[in-house]
Amino acid sequence: MARIAPRFARVEPRQLARDAVAGLMSGLAVKNCRTLAEHPGHDSPDGLQRLLRKATSDTDGVRDDLRRFVLERLGATDAVLVVDETGDVKKGGHTVGAQRQYTGTAGRIENAQVAVYLTYASAGGHALIDRELYLPQVWADDTERREQTGVPAEVKFATKPALATEMIIRALDAGVTAPWVAGDEVYGANPNLRQALEDRGIGYVLAVACSHPVRTGVGKVRADELATGLPRKAWQQMSAGEGSKGPRFYAWAWTSIDPDDDAQSSQQRWLLVRRNNATGQLAYYRCWSPAPAPLRDLVRVAGRRWTIEESFQASKTLTGLDQHQVRRWTSWHRWTILAMLAYTLLAILAATERTQNLTLQRTSLIALTCNEIHRLFNTLIAGPIRDIRHRLHWSTWRRRHQHRARTSHCHRRQTLQHDDHEVRLPY
Image (cartoon, rainbow, N blue to C red; front, side, top):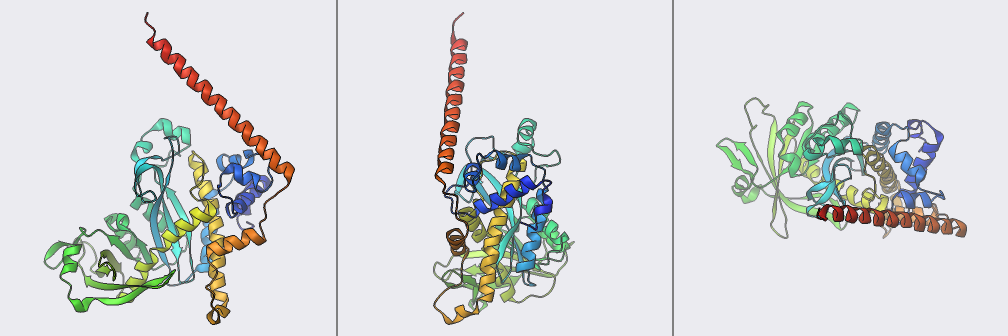
C-alpha cells in the first residue's frame, strides 16, 4: 500500500483504499461497499463509494505499480503473457457494458459484463497485471448510456482481440520481458493480434478451432484435416505442467505450416496438436517464433494458458473480483484494480513460500496455496471488528436503507399504475 500511496491526492482516499484491499482479502462471504465499510469499522459505505466514483486518484498509475510489483517478485526469462476474457452476470441494463452476450462463466448467453484480462505467468507463479472492459457496439453507439455511466469520449468499440493487443503492447512498452504469449481460440483466430506479436518479435501459442484454416504446400486445409495425416511416430508424451494432482501428461504432435500470405515472413510456424490420453479429444494451437524452438517450449507455453483460469477462480473466490455493485466506467476500473492488488499479494506470498521453504521436500506437506494463505491471513492477522455497538449500528443502517429502497419502489410502482390508468381512461 505504501507503493501506491502517491497515486492518491489525499490521505483519506489512501486510507480508504487500504481498508478496501484489506476487506477484499478478508473472509467476508459477500464483498461490496457496504460489507467492506462495516469490516474495518466505518459508519457507512459513503466513503468507499466516493473512492470508487469520484475521488482524485490515478487508477492507471496503480495498475502500473501493480505490474512492477509482479515483475519484481515473479519476473523470469521464461515468462508467458496470457490473455483471456471472463464475464460477470449482471441484472438489468444500467451497468456499464452489460448486455445479453455469451460468457464462459455461465456457459451460455446471459445478461453479463465481459472484460479481457492479462496475466503474467512464470515458473515462480502468476498474477493478473492488466484488464480492459469490453464495451459492446450497442453501448459504444449509445450516447445517453455512455453519459450516464461516465464512459470517456475517447473510448470506442474494440473487439476482445483488439483489447488484448492493446494490453500486451502496453506491457511490452512498460518493460515487461516475456518471449511468449498464449490465449484461447478467440485470440488465435485473429490475424491482427498475431501480426502485432510478430512485428514485436514475440512468439505465440494460440489455440484455434478444429476448422481453422492453415496454409501448407498443397494449399489451405483445416487444422483437424492436417492433424489426421500425422503419423503415429509424430506423437510424443509430454507434461503441460504441474496440476493439483501432479504432472498433466498429454500426447503432442506438431507440423510446420506456411504464412497466410506471401507478405509475411517465413520464420518458424507450426500447428501444434494436443491429444487427451483418456478421451482422445484433440486441441489445436497456432504457433510462431522468431527463432527455432523445440517442441517442449511450445508445450510449456500451451500449458501456461491455464494459469489465467486459476487467476480468475482465485480472484473471484478470494478477493471479490466479480462481486462489485458498481455501474460506472471509473468505478469498475477502480474496483477491479483493488481486487487485483489483493489477489496479487496472495499469489506472491504463495510463490515466495514455494521458493524459499525447501524443507517441504522432506515432508508430506504441499506448499501453501492462495486459499490456505487467505485462510491463515484472516485467522491470524485480519480479525474484523466485533464490537456490539458497531454491529448494532450497521444492523440499523441496513434496515433503514432497505426501508428507503422499499418505500421508493412502492412509490414508483404506484406512479406507474396511476399513469397507466390515466392513459386508459375514456374521454
